[in-house]
Structures are given as C-alpha cells and as structure tokens.
Image (tube, rainbow, N blue to C red):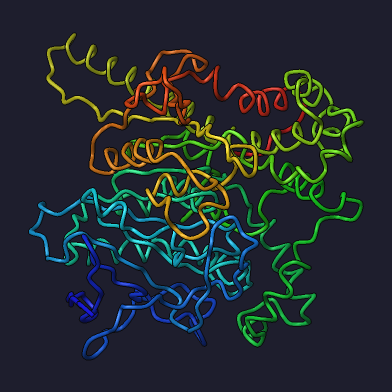
Length: 546
C-alpha cells in the first residue's frame, strides 16, 4: 500500500495515496470528548508520539447508523476520539504561504442528531480532480453537542466547528492548501451550520466564502433549549448538571432524546406530525442563540450585516420534503388542502392562499411542498434577499460619504462593499422518488455519481453533464471566481433576481450533445411558492424566525 506522511502541529499523520489524490482519515483536531471533557468546550488534541495512522475512518459521533433507511449512506465507527477531520488532497506537499490550493471544509447534515462525515458521498476525490483540498468535519451531535446543561457551555457543537476551522487554519498548508482560501459548505443541518458560522463574529477570520445547500435556519432560544434539557434530565431521573447527566451512558442519552423532544399531545401521528413539527417547532437540537457565540437568529444576523463580506452561494431542491408525504397520497386525496394546512398550525388566510396557488396538486403534495418551502426554500430566499438589502444600504452609505467628503475637499477611501450572493434551484427529478428531493443534489455537488447507493435516488443513469455543471460551478466558486450564472443585483426587484435552475436537458435527435443542463431563470419562476410560504403567513400570524 502506497502511504504518505504529513507533519501537522500535533504530530505526523500517515495517509493513503489514491489515483490523483491522497486521503488522511480521522485526524483528531480535539481531545476525545469523554470524562471531564464530555460536556465541555473542546480542547485541541495534544501532540502524539511517532506516526498516527490515518488510513481508516475515525470514530463518529453518530453511534447507530440508519443502514439502508437513510437517503445518504452514513456509516458509524466506534471509538472515543470522535472530534476528527478527514483531509483529501490532490497534492500532499506543504504549500508556501499564499501559494496553496483552495480548500473546501464540509459539514454534514442529519438534523444535528445524526449523520456521518465518513459517508462515501462526501469523499473529496471529485474536488481533488479539480485542484481543491477537501476537509470533512465530525462534531458532537444531539444532546451531547447542543443540549442545555445547567453548568456546561451552550453550543458545544458550534465550538467543535470553530476548533475544526482553527485546525484548518493552522494545518491545511501542510496538505497543500491555502488557509486564506477556505470555503465552508454544508447541507441540511450542515447548511444550517454554515449559516450559523456566517452569522458568528468569532468565525469570521476562519473562512473566506460559504456554500449553503438546503440549509435550515438557526432560531432556538436559550429558554427553549433549557426546557428540553430539563425535560431530558427529568425523564432520566438525574440532575440537569454535568455530574448528573455525565452519569448516563451514551445509549441512555440517545434513548431519552426522542422522549424529551416528543411532539405535544394531540399532534397528528406519522408524516403529518412530522410536517406539523417542521412548520411549528423546527429541529429540537441545534445552535442556540446565546447572544455571544451565536448572537442572533439567522435572518437577524444577515439583516445586520454579519458575514456580508463573505461571498455566498446557496440554494435548494425543488421538492425537499414532498416525498415524506407520498404514503399519504391516497388517504388525503379527498381532503381540502387549505383545511389540512390549517390543522397543522398554518394561519387560515395563508393556508387558503397557498392552497389556491397550488390547486393542480394533490393534498399530500401540497402539504409536503409547503413544508419544503417554509423550512428550507423560503429560508434560502430570505437570506439572499436580506444580503442584497445590506449590499444596497452599504452602497448608499458609501456613496453618501464620498459625496460629503468631496463637497468639503477631503479624500476618503471607499468603504468595503458587501460580497455577492448567488441562488440556485435544483430541479432535476429523481426517477425513483418522483421529485427533486432533499439530498438528491449531493452526488452532483461532489461529482460522485458512482458512489454507493446513489442509484437509489438517481436511478441507474444520472446525468453526468448535470454533475459537471453543478460541481463545476462549485469548483469555480471555491477557487475564488464566479459560478456560471449572475449574482443578485442591488436595486433589482426580488422576483426578477437571477436563479440558476439545474435540470437535465431532454435527450433526442434535436438536442445538441453540448446543450447545457441548466438555465438562468428568475425568482418568480423558481421560488414563488417559497416566498408565499412566508409572505402570506407574515400578514396573519407571527412568522417563525429565519
């Protein structure tokens, strides 16, 4: 086996060479979160003697994987050193300062309670082929990472992300990367992690650009987190302290999590209950707005301009969660969609307006689409809109300052402008699930159509041309350039702002082999339902914070 050694700040790691790249798996960036460190802020891993073998996956915070039941294959590996990174590089040669390759740091999804950085879908080989160093991050999940404890720091999972990014800053040059060219990216809860870091002042020096794939908003308050934390401790029969909860095994904590976050009495069972919780409660674990590390909810952080100097590319699939309602298609066929939305907690005027705009769909599909638009697609649209408003404010302020300075004959430097924002919509439909569902875009983003179980979502013949375009745009952005469509323009109406619509061009004798699999559309043509899911609600009931 062809191995390669790299010296890091904590010691030498031994990876494995592969065609066109080298992989270093499970490098610990923090001391194992066990014993006194279980519910503590992470601390850097101490130096190790000799050579640390990085030829196999590191331990995962996820202890039980979903086997074949999850959309993404997410294996679990035992061990205590769960806070680790895997590095994939096209050139494991130390880079001179300012001369390294661009870097992608990827944070996996899983609702903040599951998921695995060791998924074969996240292998960095595809990005390595195009000169991008890739880093996958493991972080504490569920209660261990995000649960409230009376005498423990909040947001331990967020602290894990920050320490991992600090590790990248100190070490990525040894793997051929440039610490000044780091792009953070994530999908679903991982996209929410990116939004959280984008809105965290402490994170700003640690990355240059960001990609949000179907991200969820950060909105949990300390009171909400405390209520869940106390409930879990009460159910387990222990004090809500590090000592009390530390007496519980991992398995006991995992067993209590579903009970502590159970839906209120009277909530519909099955998929309807899941939709109701998505609309009203959101994810029970995740980053908490603590006023410091996470000072504001996602929407508020964007609106005040935190992270506005970071170029951002974000988007969603057209039918994120519709598939979750497929099994209820026949059962709900005779139900009124507006009435059903009302039963799930949507204000009546909003429910009626949304159902009327989707009157060609069945009731189950309308419910699934509303959940998709409200939980994810609308958040992506709101973030893009808020960032463009910040850019407009900054441009106006800079122009006014220059005008005043010129009138009095004073020379001033131009104020920093807000960075651009690009929005996409992944529209290609899975032939097996019948829609552009949650996670379907991941193998296209990573250019990994041949990865295990991809065919379950994509069918046996997914479009490589589409993968080339999705992945190619990401590579161009990570490298510091623009993706293959226009950024949002200050002063342009939201409905007219550009959106790249990713779809596979139809095959046939009249279609050129070089025909693109994408088109530049507008918000009105791609995100109209997402806008409606929030705008109509805002007129009749307090909106969920984004």
